Image (cartoon, rainbow, N blue to C red; front, side):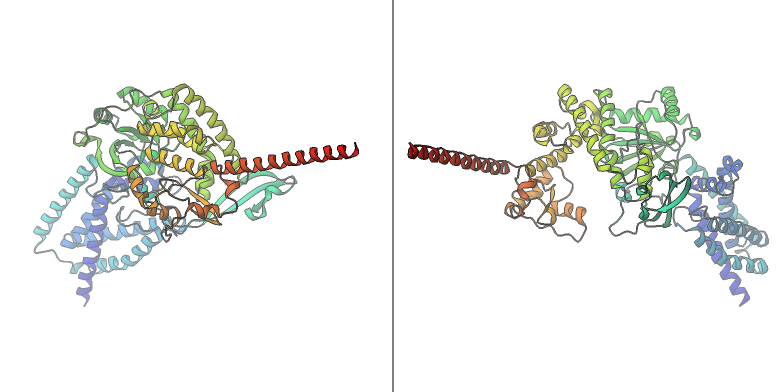
Length: 618
């Protein structure tokens, strides 16, 4: 019985360490990043060890997987089990420390294959420690497979294989990619919060100075309404963690802090050069990056470098290697997750990851042949103006639409909105910006015509459309917008959306099913012309969804699309007050005509009565 228990524990512990070591072996950089997190000032405060993180990572991975192999093969049993005991005690301490002090959320024990919290990993180590202690006690019953010589041969062969794999993945990419940015993954889909997902629960504390003393209030107490209260600070505390999508904290911000993620995720040919930190990049790798990005640009790819480093650092490298593309900013941790190479190369097609390469493999990068460079006629001054306008167009809208206080606070920092302005009328502020934007857009249109793709590039081609959609000038510019879409100067679906809005504002059925309205106390789709053909028209206009699918996206999966008619709309008592329509104008004209007729009749009667009276007196 004693020997059976020993052999069982031997297999369990050996397999555990081999598996745990292998999922880290194929991605040693991931383990190095985890070491950097442990060594940081906020955790163990051993920052002097951070430069050695990769070496320590490789040593620990090789030790872990080799010891697991040695235990299974029965090679040097006493040395093996004592070494395993030292490792498990080290893991016990690290996971307890991380869990108790809430320092590291994911220990990285199984790489990116299995995500465990620090407490889960700590309890796992607690479970396996007695097994290792038993093996230490009964190591004499751990016998070699066939012979000691054969076990030694298998161990050495395994170790050489492990070293080769480590070398290969460090110079290329991990053999298996378990992360959310793996080949074939759809980035936008993994950023979505599913319907009904549990949200973070926050508690906000407001600190206001009252009568010279700082006092803390809850949001419900509305301290800003207290006479004489002076704002000091606001703190947001996470009470309960909600659902977190696989991809979060992913942004693609340009030099002005505008997030271009939504626009770029619609690009069919997008190449990203990933460098989490330019300070730590293989600087000579940019010689290869120059060659492949020139090829990509010549074939119509939108190309950017994504980094967490400063624009000054990027400009230095851009000048040194004559790079012909701009940079986007993103969180360093997110960039490290995207690709295990610095710099690395990633190609994306409408949000789907098509290819990933290390800079060492630049010659293997697959480039789709295309139409040539797309930036030769770009008016960069106008492009910059539109980027500024778009930032103002989205400024308060994004803040008002933020799903969590943390996201709202982040956006307020990005847009330079004071944090004590929460509770003010952001809608009124946005309306003021919309009016200013419209003036600038009308000046641009007067000078250039519609500022479309050939003038300002793919990303900014729809900025003017967005500003006009948020104004009262749809009727004035609808023909210009439709013409721009026909010439491929802007997105055709957006032109179709404006046409629907124009029709709705004129009391007519829409064509593409993009507009909803509050009708008869219900939010529903505005009537659609020949509704049975709406999906055919949507397909021709390049909408990705049918109207039924779009309805579920708007109102939830349980929503059933049921079209209404103009007669249904006209039964709404507020119809003529809400809609600026030709029919409404006719009603107003008729009403005014009736009033004029009534006045004129009264005047005639009055004149007749006066004349009759005078004749009678006379």
